[in-house]
Image (cartoon, rainbow, N blue to C red; front, top):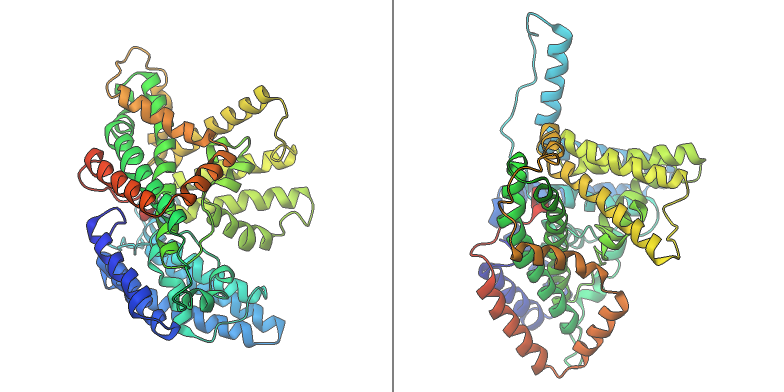
Length: 479
């Protein structure tokens, strides 16, 4: 069930009415939202609902053991056991065939001729939707209890709601347990007083319209009409068109993923749940270090808080810091999927972060506008090339794109005025200062309720006219 569909609209309407007008107590709202979340998840594959519930139950137990055990050694032991169990589940569903194939290649290389008598079998494994995201969430819960950022929850339904909450289950944002669970009682108690107005309709409507525009116009049109056909055979088009397609993919992955995040945050907001921002004009970054403060913020903060800091962070000298940065991003690349291109992408990001830290570059934006503009362009070019690696199915696909940059005698096949407008607009949205955004939102917020309601309805009608038939799955659903 995808957000920008009529089926989800009817589903959410029922959830919205039930949450605000039928179930008026926390004891009623918690099971109601859990049931709605599992129904939402079951639309993809009902069998994996059992895995989702089992993951929540296991980590509820680990959190209880970590939170109630007084001996530090045993607390750490239970935390390590929880990490091993969660990673084993994730590794089986997401990485088994990748590791099996890699191990088999090593066995063949070592054995030579004849072929080795034992090889790991390939398995037909279906990857559960959102397993990477909800696994990170349950790990966040155990980590936050271990780090004393919160106490272990006593109510299993509270933890089950945190893990399965339907706006975030498929592709995040990865809300930390310490940000979600301690405020859950207050969130679920909102609106009991008839005079209270806990729903931020203005902000939610802006987020939902933004998400729909990004996904249904920018991401869908650019990927379908331009990026996918060009990158499927970059050698057949002009070098400039191949390069524009790479820039196009930068726009596509941003508008697709940030569009999903806007929708998820806006939908959760309509139920009274506050969700941290996940994107903040990432292509206006002047360094890779700043980029990771603006791109997939909940994921990068997870890597920083639970992985980078656990490796020592910047507390044990520069060499240890640089190694921790590279290792963190390598694992962050592998988190996206079982492919050597993800490993290479993570290595590229980690190396760039390490070099910026080594030369103390990552936090220095030059005061001269033209130098700062050059920093932004160079960071964007590096990011665009890294996205080509990220998107590629194999290293050979990366080589094919680089080789296509020499094809100046080839024709322009897929470039059109519409594509150029979408490319420029997709990048230009990063140039709008936060101050202008805040002022525009203040105006929107002050309008009498009928005015934004009518404008929102007109926007939805216009979008339904200009958008393509059907909705492609969000890119990050595959992770």
